[in-house]
Length: 347
Image 1 (cartoon, rainbow, N blue to C red):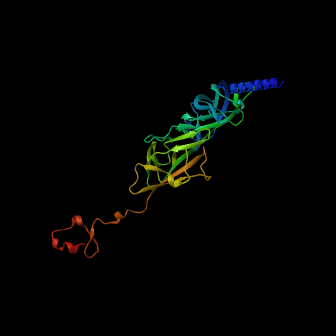
Image 2: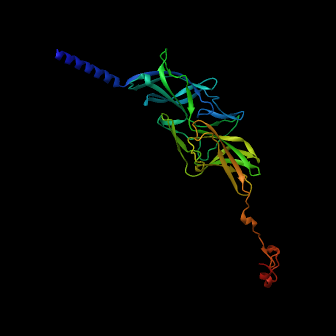
Image 3: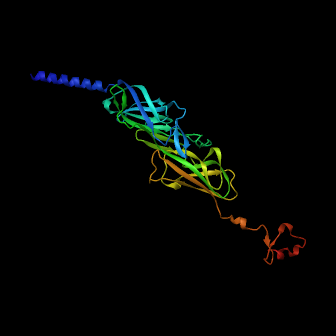
């Protein structure tokens, strides 16, 4: 009897081991994704553009039928699948739809723990280390945008949702909220001229403000910026003529991160036909919270001034005083015929 029970126990243990081994073997999976996601208002990605509407910044998907989305399937934090897929743009341009068959081979211990991380933006690499292509290269133009002229920026968006099967067998998000959220900071640069002269702005210079590039960890939702060495110059797509007032034209920038110390970066204007004398500018970046928040649009005001302090050398006379110190001697027209009196007549 004991031998029989022992044999049964061994057979049960062996069957359990075989079952566990089967579960640990990679299997073929086919996920039929069916979802529609909204794009968060007020920001953009590489496939989208910025325009002004009644003075406010708005994104637009005009003329777009599809956009490329880095589509990733996870079980918890374990990556099972990652590849770029084309998502359809809705007719109203406000949402993106994915209806794709995703095939992959993996070990999945709990299919109910699947999640989708989708990244919208121009990026290469793996989900935990995505390299974002820069919207700015030295010498390349920064777009002056308006209600008719759009500016294109490479801003990363991330959507992170849990997946489950619906009654039709499609894999859909378990939550009703399906939104691509932007990361990094958007900055609208406005310009004011207080030099008392008309000036023409032809470009911007940047020190530690405009980034050379950025790396995105899509699962941790973190950005790391790469900076240029030294000051960089970026011409504008068109020159901006500013009287002694605030300009009604502006540019929009995206930066991965912004330090809280305003003395650690600098953004300046390049004045083409500046008046004689020393010019300087001050930059003010507005924020309503102690730290800069992801996806928020901030306003940067750059004001151009002309110093009122005269150059000390300009106060020096080109001529010299006469001996009595009552007047200046007009040296170019001075009569040098009597040189014996030269040193006593002037000093």
